[in-house]
Image (cartoon, rainbow, N blue to C red; front, side, top):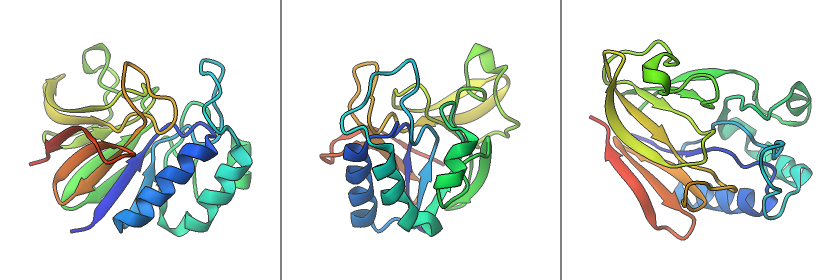
Length: 190
């Protein structure tokens, strides 16, 4: 089984993107899975530390063959013109370590409103998204489905009292970690 790093909401921070890439390289993970909002901070967020979208582009593009990415609410078509990997898909269905992940940004497809916004999922499958900037790792029953809900938090603009974080899938264990190695949340995916 392979290791995978999940990250969301870089929002153009070269400072935190560099930390994420260093963590990714040191982890030996197979792929870096980005859950949107890569280059821009958006009108609702303050500028993150080290805001430099052009530097983020130059850091991510050399890893283009190791990145899977979905579109966030801050992505635009011009982003695809400068990024060397597909970044405009609304979602991706990924089969990793024998598990089915429904990866999306979370601004459209999510577990809010009693499950009305859930993507088409089966019991035991995993919805992973960013957008809220708040880490989540839980199993829940919603809209008649027994699913896992994961959110690695935000790489650069954490909210809800959280810290800058990312997710690590190792075998069937999902951990949300801070950049100093501290575990924020974790869950066994069975």
